[in-house]
Length: 319
Picture 1 (tube, rainbow, N blue to C red):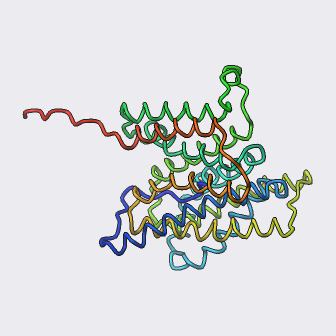
Picture 2 (cartoon, rainbow, N blue to C red):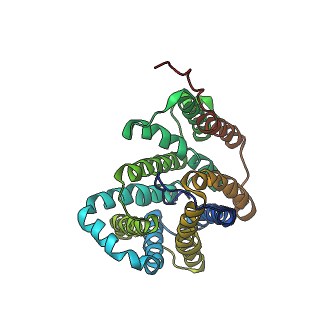
Picture 3 (cartoon, rainbow, N blue to C red):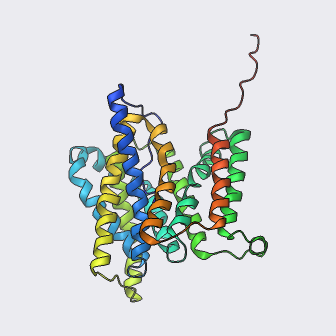
């Protein structure tokens, strides 16, 4: 799942080939562990309600990482005192809603399809950044966004043009689209907020805020007798989501950002979609549908248009 902290624009990679060599394995392992979150959540979906899974994952991941960031306690407390509502709002959008929607969606759709749809979030980020941050979009980025959007519509409509025209969609995939949008909005809000502390301590604060916002949703599930089945399956899935797929994943992402730089580490995100498809095939016996392949082709084409093609510089003007 794309519950990975976003990096700050000014971060630069460490100098030296050895640092880069250690950064790439960290990034690849990060996205492999992130892909495993989709598998674990899908596996345990019948036994654990989505908001309970969200609350406990965020809470436990925050608790695991707290000792690692203890030396930043002063800066973290200062940020909490000065901007508590922003921390809660950003954590709610990027962690509570993003994850809760994915867990809801996985009740009604495949992990493979969810992973493909989540690959849309960088495209959504570009579009939102145009309106929220005033970042230039450009012709190729705009065209790439439209092509990727077409791919998403193909997947959500299961390749059925009649369903698309009649607005008949799979609710599970609509939840995943909502999650991708929340992640894109979270990315833009973190860039805009410029909280001014290091990335990992900020993530711990946002995890805590996300858990706090998820608690009322979880209590509502309990009130409606939607209780988690804390059997071996549930405990094993939760242990993975909070540990390797939570705290360790966040730590590895931050390490990759330190060594590779923000842009290169983030671009490797697309490995997550590949890893989800492979793991879902091996562990959940899922297979790719025709509409998944067609939609994925559109999304990849959109990503290439938006990120690989650069506008040609105009002719230099005489002073």
